[in-house]
Image (tube, rainbow, N blue to C red; front, side, top):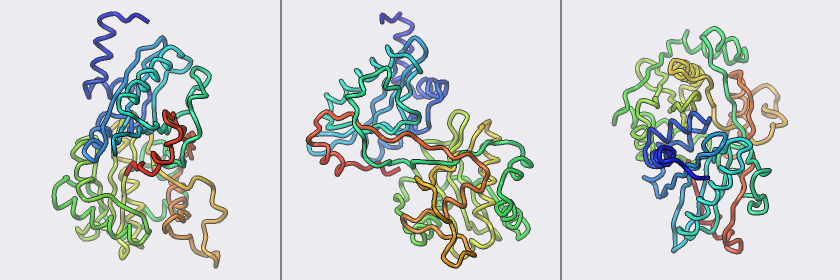
Length: 349
């Protein structure tokens, strides 16, 4: 395809300017993890970013590839992408040619692709893709349609709705906190508390600081407070018509007050007021748990390590739709070194 001067200029701007890239990505329904700011965040923590834009017959094909270099070679990762216009084989094939060329320059062993939607293998050579590793991003999520307050509460499970109102009756308040040293320290203290209780890893404090620095007004740090003290907090970010609950934490001592439910409700309201249509609660177990109750049958199981039953129950009761993502695939360039690439690999989302 021969591009006009204007089309070529437009593609160059997409690949080199934040505003143009994100506008094109949002217009094509792309995911936050393919956004310019997400790439910029990852560049602060060991990744290198390359962006590709190809103008096709039915839209624009886009891919943000994260590369991590070690020992003279690299691995590539495409989180929740790429964006490929449906049925546009020309754009799709050209996009992968450009990705392959960059991979060769960077001596990539493999590129792991974790799509947001299924890759249209009918328009590209399926033999170049192999089954990938276990999902790095959550295999499933819960997405809540955003509406007015009455509808938001009405679509919740009755116990979730009860807990939101319980928190309000017990004097739990919410605030959108200014992001500064004090609020970040408070949020990180809650994260440390939660990670110890639920046995999961967290980033360094600098990572969360950089997250808010990159996303600015598109993000919010929302606290639920009791007598002015934060007892639960969420980091939420909007992109296009969707907002995502990226990080959250709560106090072990004050969880019984329902603060964790109320702060999610407030994050949904913040997202709606920004014009978002959906709120992504991020990750739930890949498969349906056989039961979400502990052995005595009376209590909901907690969340600990790989046991996400409590998390499943918490998120699904907000009334959203469960979404399953396609399995990861790999585009291997040196297949016999793939196992080395997997040992080197880590996204640290």
